[in-house]
Length: 93
Length: 366
Ligand SMILES: [Zn+2]
Image 1 (cartoon, rainbow over the protein chains, first blue to last red):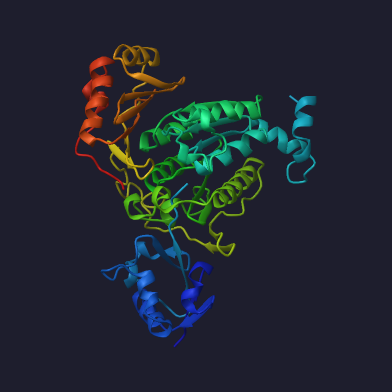
Image 2: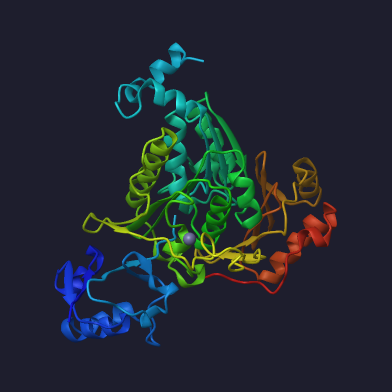
């Protein structure tokens, strides 16, 4: 089975032991978060998900450049070779 | 018309740049730019654009100058506290460069005023502090095929992207469903002045590239910066075919109701700062407003061209802008603030209730 590539922005890299690119098997975004949590610790879940297990409002996950909020959020399916990244929404000024 | 000797001298250090040159300088002089918001980002954006000789700048902002702005908004100083930001900014900007034209509009950004903002300009630059206001500007820019340079900052982080309608994703493609009440705000989280200068400079650089007919660097890309480790991540973003603003024809009612009340959180110790926004632009007679306030025996603090600040009582200070927007700093309740507002604007100035249209069931953003 091919793997998904998570590109980790620097602001999150401490969660992932400084790694900037992580390859893993995951069938959807939720699955990816759980796999990352197993691999790097519970902090991953705490940082990415809210109390009800949803993606935090301030965060956005992009799969091949498309925001998953358009495609079912955490249920968005992932395919081998997909590039995933996570960035917060910034709205101050 | 060629550049005058004076202009040649003033802009000499950028005319020698290969990226600008004489031709570029002439293009800047002919350029018409709208800047929405003259706060933390907008101060620097306006300063750079005006100093560089952009011929026409339209600035919109609903806020008044507060002492807590001064650590990061260098167009303002202690003597300008309580003035409408657009008025204070215009004065300073014209001192920096008397050769440009500045339109200063003391209005709140919503779907109607955003239409006004994009009218008769070449590009819109983001100096806002609210995602919902940005959605309104984004929608107007998409509708009128107007380039929109998005930039924002909070704490030590910032983001920027350049939106070219029809070519790149729009702001809703990037952030489909963000809401101000779910995002951190500068009032409570704070903001480092350096991230503001960094992001505003990136926005100006993108704006100038577009004005000069060059390719912007952040088209289709979302840049995310963090001062903590001075990291820069640029992520390619794709347009979504489900975006209600740029892809689905009449796809979604994205309009949000004009808010009657917004609380600007934690701005003054012990007091609440409430912003009252009427339904439309009331275009108040400022002379008459001054008379009403003076006759009422209230102490006038600051009297500008487009704003008046007065002390209502020991608990409450009120600033009223020409557009009818009021900023009320009070230890009292929202109801009391509204009563004061109605007393002045409806009872004394004779504006009709329907024009004001402020509802008392207020939405408070904290
Ligand atoms: Zn869009």
